[in-house]
Length: 310
Image (tube, rainbow, N blue to C red; front, side):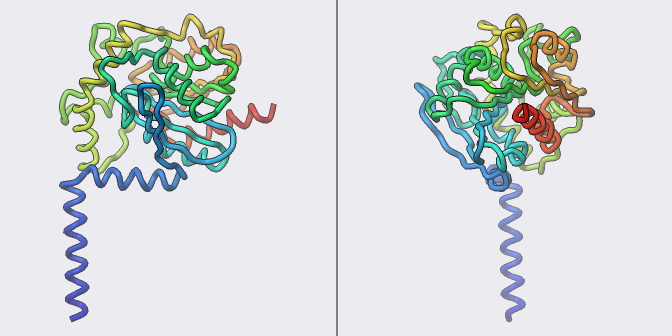
């Protein structure tokens, strides 16, 4: 009798797990995310910043570190990376306005300067006077703009495969961008694999239902992402002309197989930013903190510690 009850319970649990796996990919994804956040010591919070509600992750203690995701990204793109930071640093990871769970306002502008100003106000509201900032891709350009606008507040700057300069060699993404196409916009669920292959040297493995969840979300987000793209085409803000004005000690970290922003951009950043350190990650694509979070975090922590030792 007991064996029959146990078998029935196990069967029910297996059936429930199968339903979650196949029919409720969002639940499965939130489970994975919750576990990663727990391991990193991060808690989800939100705050009103003028006309936007910004949802963010926060955890750890020590010197503040602001992490800024790229175009079409979200805060949890940094979670596994942040796991290695929170034992020593106070980590803050927002959904940049217009992305993730933060406000999306049709009448607002989402060009780089506007976004940098929002994150500046965000840190003011959190009462953080000075901080280290790292950004990936579009997030790097926002981080660089913060370093230019508020040099007295940005202690160090880290640019992970950052936009903001014109690489001598154009990537496939940049060739398409110049003709008016954005290869990061997902047309349909089947198109998601193309974006993954473009972004990573070796695409991250995802359970099929979770990948389906991401793909469907990317399709839903496409119209507003397109609006943000247009805001940046109309009001472009490049870092290149102002690199010499960046006072913050800077880490330039790049994947050598970046097909979105070619590695030749590194030389442009190096020529412009006086106080810099460069790290090239071999066999890595456009998002090192996602593709190889432990290694990327190790390079970032070394950079921070070197600065603290001076």
